[in-house]
Image (cartoon, rainbow, N blue to C red; front, side):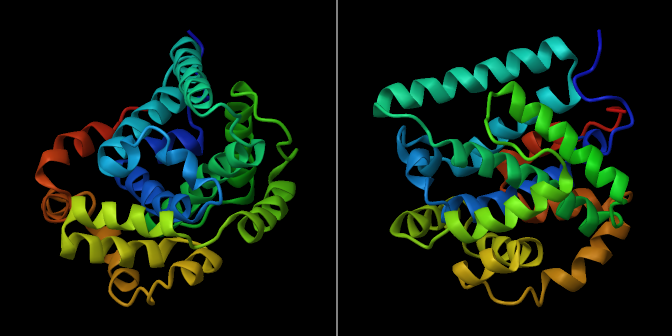
Length: 255
């Protein structure tokens, strides 16, 4: 059976690495909270009540698409589409097309940022291939108006950050939920990580302090990732009830 994402793709490497996936969702958690469409995340109440649990279920869907064969990826995409349709029926209106595009753009941007913080700079051909992969994903979800190539995506990404983000009362509610689930010191570490990975505009809207702690430690952690120290770091930073879910994100044989 043909894979949805070709073997050897940089996207497969990123999404088979638990640390990269965690970085992607740390950045996305910041940007989601600022979206002018963030109210859609509150329709069912499940995200604000359990943001960490929702993160792991979303990550599992993403890995089924990126790391699965065409049939498995197609099933996951159909389930995502049905979930969106159910929320739209509940609310009685459609999720804006730009909101769908922005979520896809987060996956592109934070996948690149995560890999570069933990590994090395991406080559131009890898950036083009990564965007092409996520564009296929977006087309399968019937998201309209996707840019044709990476250069056009970069331009539209900059415009969407300026147009579609704002700090609102729902931003405060989501961050209160993050703090409630993580506890004070893990929450403060999340803020440091977010400051080290999100675009400057996102950091400014959230009032994130400079990543004085995380930025210099990320290269150190990158060097420890192939040692037993990685497990110790996970145990320190991840709530105990979610450690098994973090372990499941690691897919070293994903090609």
